[in-house]
Image (tube, rainbow, N blue to C red; front, side):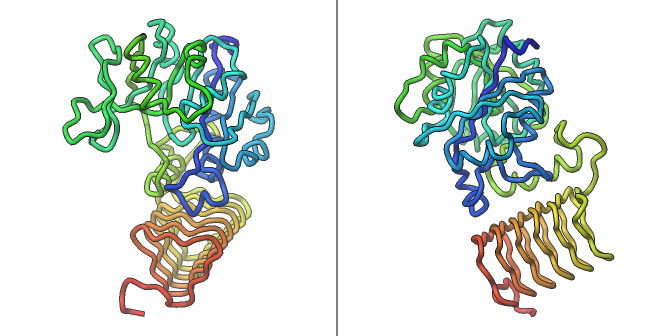
Length: 357
């Protein structure tokens, strides 16, 4: 694919409220996922298809992106950053990047979707049909939780439907699009605009919008349950990422982290740097950020532990999110969606769901 023909835009301006408290200190695309910031996986896939010029649209904690990725040269990319002074939505964020775009074809990504789609095939489909815009579509078992995209026999988009109890199709918007550059210029400026609710319905009414179905891996990483599953899928090799390279396995344990004898680290668990896992502890499908400590006999399942978190002996953490620097005392039980804000300390036995201490 010619670099001059295609540029990419990553929309990364959201506040990530559904992943709080983790996003109180970091923008969502910069949260560590399988050992690296989530955005690293997406950028590496963009580079893999030969697109090297990428514009990152930021707003919330914008400085974090440049501090980590710089000019993009370590990934073989040329990165530019365009920040919004106030949140402009997906469509407004894309329009805000227009001044940095000069290729005729623009590949656009939501910054919180983990996908194994064939991006080259998506761009080829867009160019073959001479579409104004082409949407990547994926099929899901239960489309009621998503907006559906209805297409005709040739793949032309006929309608966008909001969430409904009786969806006419299992095709949903997968958060990746291809635009003609001049179409982006037509998006209104100076206010928040939604691609999904305003831009695409308007284009369908007056232009050529096509859908391209890809049945590869897909997951929206916007909520804790999907975040931990996506990270585990990356660690185990179910989801693709050039960043992670070769063999995958049940756990990612970087050099400098320690796992004591008798501890069990499984289920696609990803440990950060300087993590300590005590004797007899069990971690299953966990995401553990740098500097965290899980003490002897503790159990952490399908949960996220922020930077510098301490989990006390024999504590149980299941389906929970623990914010940076929080201290969870011995024998505590945090279950079923519990969230602990950064720096909070819970004393030994201070919070439980059962009477057996």
